[in-house]
Image (cartoon, rainbow, N blue to C red; front, side, top):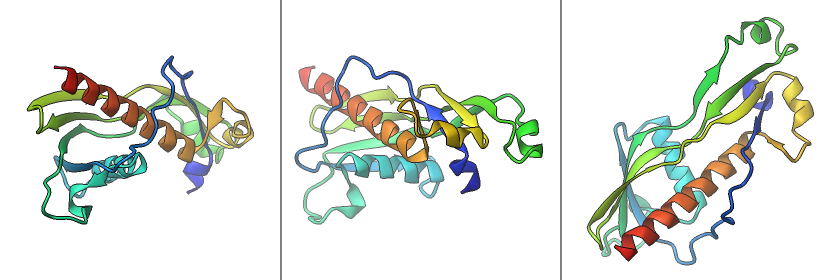
Length: 170
């Protein structure tokens, strides 16, 4: 908790697309991955739930199969730091600047159209670690862990919406 409380993330400027709204009707999606008990898969499922998808094992009506399925290929949250030893030794007084690469690489399988699309939502985000991060959090340009999770869920929603539009056009 101390580490996440002392980290601030500077998100890239929003792209030209506006935020895609949440799903109007909940679509059911089957999720699989290399390790079904992994932290990465749990984060991926949480992001899908946050944007309005029902995970297949959570459906209320077992008679209808999942409309979509995804296979998680690579997980979340690679970090690219120079050695933060000085930050560790000074208990966060001397900050470290680095980056985090939140996102997922996954395959989307649409059973209706029979298409499979590989999607990559990873993007490098600047990160500051240490007590100085707390001073940046009131700024509109910097966010904490929750803001980073919301950003990732929104990127996932845009990627899925775009991929589904592409699949239906083909």
